[in-house]
Length: 476
Image (cartoon, rainbow, N blue to C red; front, side, top):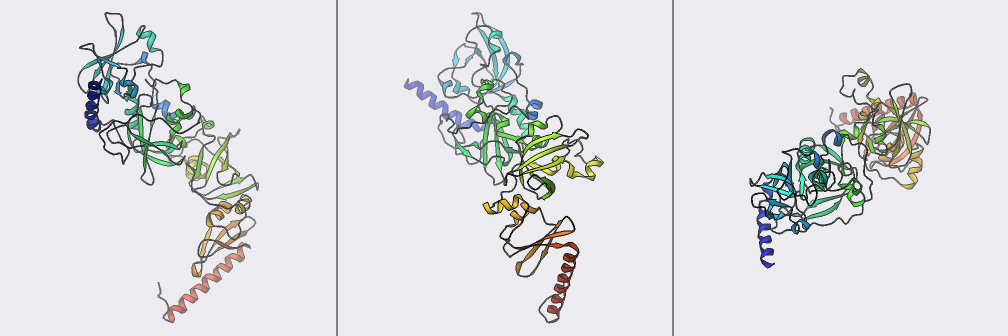
């Protein structure tokens, strides 16, 4: 027993020292080099997200599930043993017939070479090891290959590399959004140690590395947020040789489906008339100022850019190609409506319709994610919901209520004024102090306000000219 334990330790030291020579093994920034093996940890978080069975275009278009019955010779896998695999040996050496320790094959690439029936009647699944040039087999516990291949058992320890290779090709450098809060960071450069981390949901991240994860969740995706922090998730994509049933991806395991951890920007914005129902419930924000119908006031209102909304409903028009989208403001809880074109076929710029009125197109106006974080007070929210602006408001609160200003006028001592065009030839005039807080609001007739603005500008020019004549200024 002592001799066996010592042999295992020596093997571990050798394996961890050479682990990083394998390009499929990737680590988050900051993982420390240690010469010890850390046991696999269990998830401490309680995630009760349902399995996302919608909006799977990226998955269905690029990843195919292969049942064991459909495996083709040449398919590649990597040996990724977990702690119980140290007790139960998975492979036997084809030359000697002796069982081989799973740890001695750790991180080695196995190439599928079909299945055979041995002279003793047992059926074998055969592999060639790319790393050491030897042949191995996994002996099916009982029954024939045809009996065995139709279940989810597969071959223990093997993570399917086909998914990893495709994910590398399709995801490297891509921008995605987080769909859960629960991810991990590596704590060991040469081992399997990790630490759970909690991040913001619907946060923009960029894929920095893709490697192999575990047998059940074979694709390890490392992403980086805007602050340079890296974290990762091991996810199941095609579920080839995953060993888990679909109904097992619930509760804590739900986040290990790609669609429950990440979402591609391209997929989020690829709304069209065929899959529009899949986007109900998603969070988006305005990329540009636009107009929307405010349900509370029953008036068309300007809304600024970078404001977050949840898509509540999408209803097609009967007589044209447009859809009415119902949005819920994520800050105020108020509802807005916008008629948009969903199809993206015209976004390339070749369509005259798009060039003439891009504001009609959903993907032009909206981007995935929650947008800007805006602080409001309990008192201000009621006024904002009705489109009113009041002294004491911040710039963000004014824009929530009235949209972005049509004109900005700067005065002395840091004072400035925002002007909003209103219906009936009226203007809303909002005065700010030097620290961005509203001091006064007023409504004026547009012609009178423009005349007053001209007088102020003329007066300002005179003062500037007199200052220069008196030696107090420098002409431009």
